[in-house]
Image 1 (tube, rainbow, N blue to C red):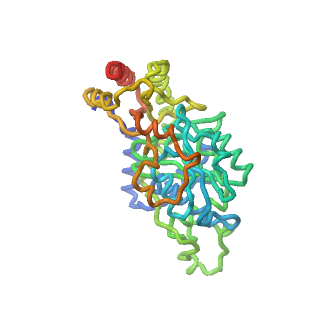
Image 2: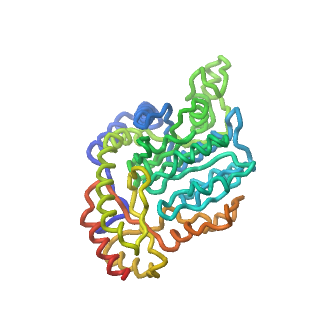
Image 3: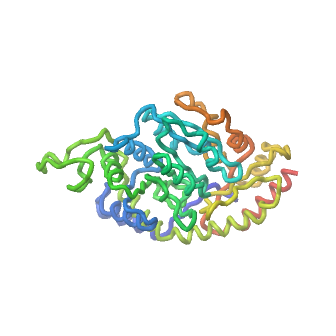
Amino acid sequence: MFYELAAPTWGPEEAAAAKGVIESGLYTMGAHVKAFEGEFAAYHGAKHGIMVNSGSSANLIAVAAMAYKADRPLSRGDEVIVPAISWATTYHPLQQYGLKLRFVDVELETLNLDPSLLEKALTPRTRAIVAVSILGNPAALDTIRAFADAHGLYLLEDNCESMDAELGGRKCGTFGHLNTFSFFFSHHISTMEGGMILTDDTELAHLCRSLRAHGWTRDLPEDSPVFQRKGNDFYEAYRFILPGYNVRPLEIEAAIGREQLKKLPGFTAQRRKNLALFQSLFGDDDRFIIQRENGRSSAFSFTLILNPARRIDRIRAFEALKAADIGYRIITGGNFLRHDVIRHYDYEVVSGAVPNADTAHDHGFFVGNHPFDLSPQITCLRDVLDKACR
């Protein structure tokens, strides 16, 4: 395809790392996972990193950890404020732990949760907020964290789409009590499958480590705040303290991740160069609503909303993109309230409607961005849409 939605980012370094693990004969979670956790946490200035097998699992384990805190755990029936646009597994763990979701509309220009609606979303049952930075563009994380702190709420930052983005000189994925990342094929760095949780809270980190691997104590130090050793090493090696999962990563994924992390600054720099070209070509054309950059985007992709006021035919635009061999898709998961699965949720829509999320769902789409020069592709995209949207 001339302009792909996703592209590989591996080189000989990743192949050599994978081969080294295969030749070692040690495939399950081990030394490479531990090293990658430390390196990834250090890159973000965080105390603890816990690697798992996907970003979706990272969200699941993060929610579970908050449900097993010793003090003020999340409980069934508690409410969580969430944005109307995100990927499905931002929401599913909340539903699976019996939480009620309060959906808040997004800002049309940023596609992130509208912080001006937080006060209206708050009730006596509210216990947490999930902040999502959509497709590389930082949400109002500083404002959201300040609101959470002022009201005694937990903040889960789902940063699966926005690795290496920055707000106020601070990396996204560090504003929450728990912060999640994805290493899926199409994301900023890829380990095939894989994810990470970052936190500065030792109790939450140890809960995540236990929940990641069957709910046992094997991966926890003797002075862990989440259990007390009983002194019998034969028993302690297989002692279960939580109803956990098996979402452990593989050594091969972590070995590849260590090589990808070295390349991340260069990847992001090129993504931002591509973003600058995209912004210069589309930013002043009122037919198209593109993301207003908040902080420094890491430019996962390029979103376009066809301005409803201009009555542009999206189907015609899609046909033109397809003819030009340009890939496109829905913005993240679109308005989650529009999916069939919502019938299984306990939820409420703040203000009764999410018109901006609906506009993005009905008139928007995104095209890919990659860590190499896309000048020919982005220029072609501009020409194709200019003709199709007249």
